[in-house]
Image (cartoon, rainbow, N blue to C red; front, side, top):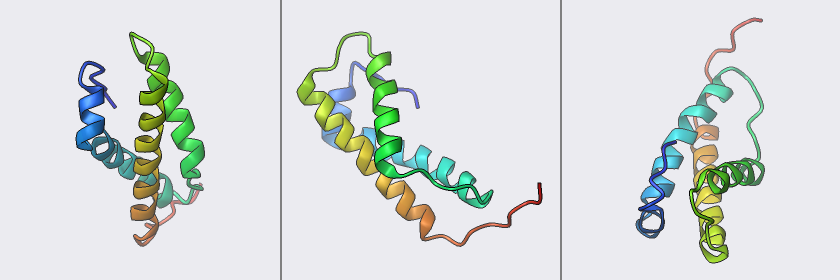
Length: 95
């Protein structure tokens, strides 16, 4: 996901950041699910994504924004996982 750090705070306030992340996660989780692979727990995946976002920021993210950013990431992970788990599993290809 490409993040525009100059508009990150606004994107979090409007929900755009979460919506975009949820779309990308849904695609990735669906792919894993269709291949029969276990899906990650939302909190585990959210902490990994948050760490990547924090490290890629040109300037440190304030602790208040870091908290809200993690909450947005966690929400996106939970929603994407729920979407995929509600779908029928695709065929598993033999390995």
